[in-house]
Image (cartoon, rainbow, N blue to C red):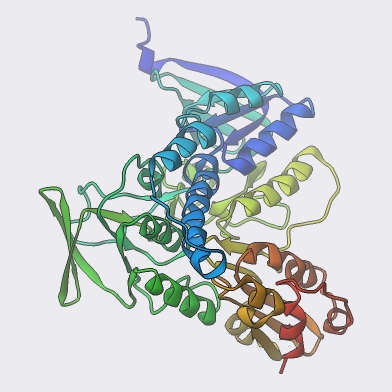
Length: 467
């Protein structure tokens, strides 16, 4: 009797299988194919992953637009009267046409195929060491043996907190927010981390009445407390209501409105954005077939990104637990690529991991916070300075709120962490990231010449404040 379509299985041997084609996976598949290896690259959604379609690129287009409105509002204090009527239409157009090509990955697929890789849209699962089953959209299955190995880069998806009634309501995650072609009159944001703060400020600047509900006691909680306090002050000054230590107990949706119970208060809004973390895509990956726990939130890897205890298996990106950032995935991709190809190179090191939240002002950090350094048992000295009191801050005027804070291991005389809040904070961070990464002696940093008048010159003042 002939097999049905859903039972059809084809067998294949390739050198490398890459599961998940976010930035790191796409880069690794490209490099492996360019090196002459046979590569099967699989993703169930869009080649390129979250970053170019629902994260980094389109969201920063939205941020750029909102920042332009803010700058126009500051013109009265600097250059004269300016009248601006905001419109969401050009933002939606740029995101759709310029950033995402209508959320179509054809260009990315062709680019990857041009290197010699085979690209497949389907659901890939491990089927044992060095083996992968790929379920295709037509219901058929390809069973693949990876001679050199398998690289996992499954990424994450938006998480939903366990709030009564939330499931089944038409709430937004970052994905729906990035596809919005019109704006609600009012918005409640659950989550005061980077995504929640960035999008809250964007929508508020376009006239939406925004409330942020943060379960913890401060915004951007992985940054220094001073950064969270400053961002809260800025958002409140722009009309955003910020509720910290907020316990959302229930959500209902009826007649085009969301109703939330938050402690003793009831909030009503046209739209609800849930920005309360991410869930790793590990639950449908077949981890149990190679002896790994499918309920785990991370995959343990060594300094070459080899999965601990499993032969011919590498993992990169968010699921390694080293930092849910595109730049971490790309960094790990290069290390795993070298190991896969047998090339020499430095192992992974995360002591100078940078991160930037693109609010206005930006919140940027590298390495340890003060508390992390103290918890690690270091002999800590800290120094800080308000950015608006720097020479450039004085010249800049409105919008120059910020600070630079440095954390020193006094026993070694080197910086182990730094935070910058301010205009172009992510760019100012570059110098401090080099200092932390290379363990540049504080004495050397004190002897530098810092250009005047610049924002980065405040680094010298912060280092001079070490105590």
